[in-house]
Image (tube, rainbow, N blue to C red; front, side, top):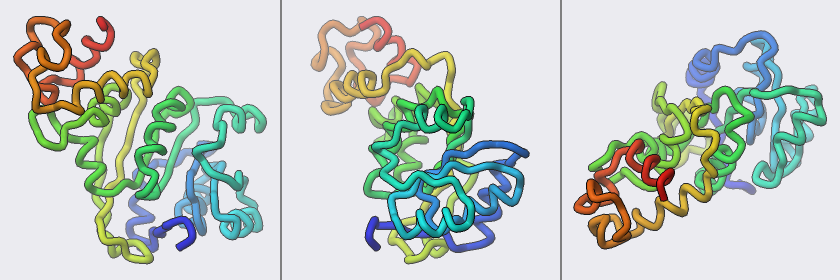
Length: 239
């Protein structure tokens, strides 16, 4: 596949995803990577609206021929706020994407930086990535990215999606994740917070005192994976 795409083909899971979205008349979804529109047309059939962003020119042409509003280009280079303004669309809007595995990290960072634009964000992600985002403190999968995402969003996993539901069949299973932005943390700059966290998690087996001697006394004998999301937020605020 030209852009490493896999496509959700299982009609049962397509129905379950759109049921979960609870599309209301007039809901506007920014959909990244709509492909042939398996989710797109279900949203439209339930009274929603879609602004698609599709990198593949063939799929762009196909969706446009069906009357879908599509930006043909790379989502990572698209200014969503500007595109909404050009169309006279006020935010917050909704977001959906079946995220390409090879650019998951970059897409999540961009969604983080745009989160003020969205009331909710629904993503099909590789199962392993979903489990990292849902990881708890004191576990191996708990990481700087876990902390970042949980500081910015309420995260839930409605269900997993087996690899056989996609074509071509990938080697890994997937999950549907739902993220609701936390308005109280809109002040956080994603990249700045992630840099701060990475300084510690890059040496996660060391005690905090050995990474930064200026950390508060309560944290000095702990390791990065021992701190809760709230602890990290408080550290970041007081840095």
